[in-house]
Length: 390
Image 1: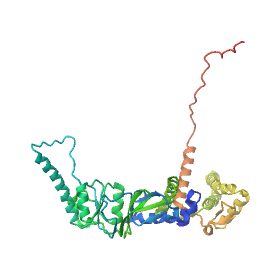
Image 2 (image 1 turned 120 degrees about the horizontal axis):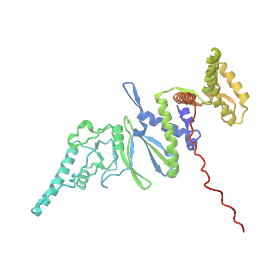
Image 3 (image 1 turned 120 degrees about the vertical axis):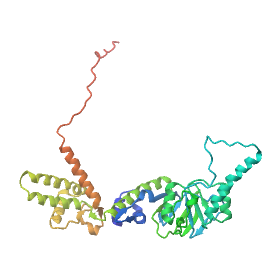
Image 4 (image 1 turned 90 degrees about the horizontal axis):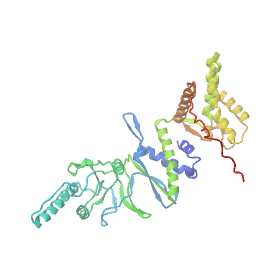
């Protein structure tokens, strides 16, 4: 699989770090891969997030066995490093819910206003006490946390992170084994996440990042990319996305095909043999497709400066003898065994290419005539202006 992924990024910017990028892509796909009743799912878009942090060298890039979030704790006195934390994930605010624009409150005396403020604080305190009954070490919510709640958590030696994105919260839940709770009253012991090995906050550049790593069985991960500038990181991100897609395709269909035009030449030789067994006009479609398949190895030979006729004759003879793994070396223009050369491609991609090409050819053959709408040239509205006589 590593050689297959390396083939997809061999001509891109990250070719110098191809071994590193292949390991990152393969590890990320294996982390987020899941199988339920024989049904395989690999959602790299939602559960394998790429976090780009400028600074450092590209070799420092890694796949975290957990989640990385661009957030800091809400109170400076809260703990920034906790081993084996108990994590609570919320989708509700830990602050008093303000009324809508149509809400009116009428007070007859000044003490009533003070009592209204006390009621708001009592509601927040009740929510915090409900959470503290489960003895958490870290509270993460997608909404806000009021100053009162921050004070209570700080006194209870509990760290808190607020306004986390929904996608990040979902990945944290899959990584630490927690369940996102919509109401504090619905919180149960089974909703607490206990599979995280280490919670710590580090400063990289000018921003703080929260690390939830050392997870026992993470189903989501974060790929941390380091690089000298944002432009280089964006280019690495695009190349790594290609590698992730290739690894995902191989996970669904773990069948490889030799590259270098070997697959196309094997198909061509097989179709020519089939055409010889068919008499009449019915054999011509086989010959036409067989000749079209030889375009790939012929183009490889021509691009490398080799003799196309001689090399294709040698390659055709190899495949006629049953050595179907032989293809064209794009650097030298000579034929080599792709098994020893290490050049493989995904069979699912090859199959899709052939299906698309044949369907496009069938569609064109069904065309009887082409109707083209042309714009008539505008007629001159009079004789050209005569030259002025001097």
